[in-house]
Amino acid sequence: MLDTFLNYDFRNFAIIFEKKSGTHRKERTVRISACRTTIMFATTVLFMLGCASRQPQVGAEVVQGEKTIEMKASSFNYEPNNIRASQGDTIIFNITNISGNKHNFTIKDPSGQVLQSVDLLPDKTEHIKITFSEKGTYTFYCNKPLHSTMGMTGSIVVNRVN
Ligand SMILES: [Cu+2]
Image (cartoon, rainbow, N blue to C red; front, side, top):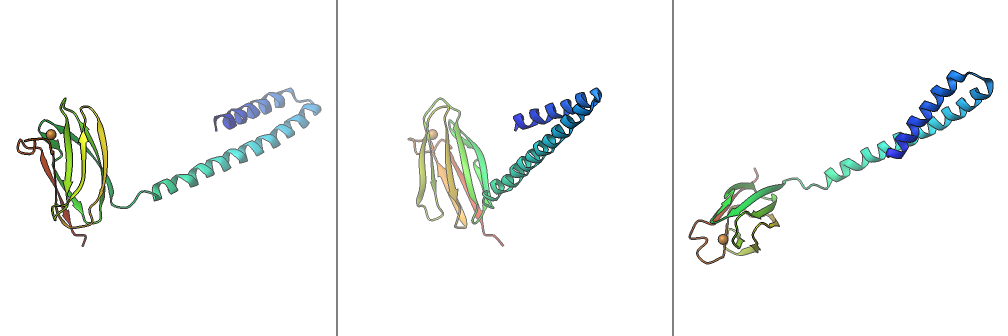
């Protein structure tokens, strides 16, 4: 891309330079240069169109209702710990353990079944992707001894889509 632009700029410069010299022989060179410039320009435009048409495809891959939540786990708290979502939403939790202690993130669906359970090491980030297919309250907590009693809990209230 940068090479194409550099070439293009150089051709332009060549035309300006050669036009100033004004001889017949140079005129021919100018025309050749101009032709090359047109090709260069066309290539650049095609390249840019190529980039432009590629970008919306990336956007199209993003599932509607997919969200990312940056979560912090500390001793003994999650932030945020009260989340609202709509039925069918997919949430990617990026959970960073900002404390010096080992923690955990265990999530249960409204029927109390464990969906996922991951240990959170100090100063590390874990990525968890969950689709909330049922309405109701999903709960999450730290499974380390007494941590949930100390307050390491949270909930995700999932509402039905109207
Ligand atoms: Cu914990």
